[in-house]
Image (cartoon, rainbow, N blue to C red; front, side, top):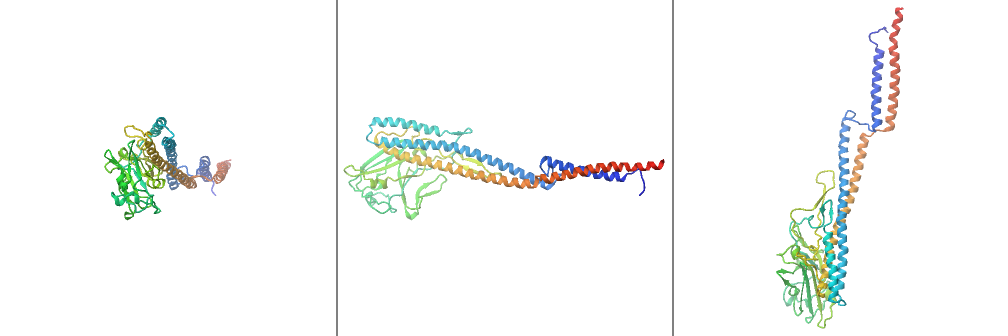
Length: 445
């Protein structure tokens, strides 16, 4: 091989190897120090893009999960207020049952009434529960495209029971669901009480040959009208719709009797808050079997006022647009529950007939409150499942992102050590290569 001094090819090659080893060592050092095998798009352009999209999704999923936690806190706030209202309503029913007992004087009933009015005021306070400045159960978070009427449904009478006017349909012919006669006599007396807008009204008289519709009262242009759900129309409750304009039916699609406000007066102002019937014989004895069937009216639909737009809450619980849960919270104020009139008039326990009517009002109010409590509980349960699903999704996406981007530290440390040794070896050889040209000087001596 020729001896040259201008171009030291050995040194040049060794230098290139040194630079290559140094770059490899620096890359291994970056991976070991960051814990990632992809630190920039230069390392792996496609892998970098894919992992960045995954990072975006992970953060979106984590934020959605955080949303569910905040939403759950909001719903627990509303649920706590409703649960407290249920407790108050239980206490109010106890007061009404106490007031209906003739061991009490009217003065005693007035005392019970004062306490009850304080409890009703507390229900209004509960309805002002807030979360982050938002009122929750005062009716502003509801969605009702149209006003509805209260429906009190009785399905304890025979399925062929009709409520038409006239002797042909007299209640003396009524039977229970099992087909047994209620044994109501024409000499018996009836007493019907109902509560509308916080005011209790009562009518009474001799049964004679009156039908159910004959004894249903009409007062102050507000009609308490029975609606018949016959087998012929498969449980359809005539002329009654829900707040979305859909026809409603009895739970089992069989016949029943429904009591509701007049069709001209939907909404809470004219709702039938309570409806009771009592049959006694001509000696004043209560006919319990007949009353058990006739008086078995349960709240099936509550009256709601039409809302100004959709006030329901929207919970964003997904990482993409419009992956949400909509939650409507009904009005839990005393007026909406039938405990007081729009003008603030509260239920009265005096006289005794008012206390009896109030018992059914509280029963219906408890049904409304429990229905709202159940809805809140169902949403909370759903949010728990949503949170668990989001957590799982985030974990799995993070696992995939880790596979693409995270460095195998054992492997990278091995690579770093190898490249570091090679770089040191190249440095030593470069020194040797630089000394090779000095051999030419000996020829000049």
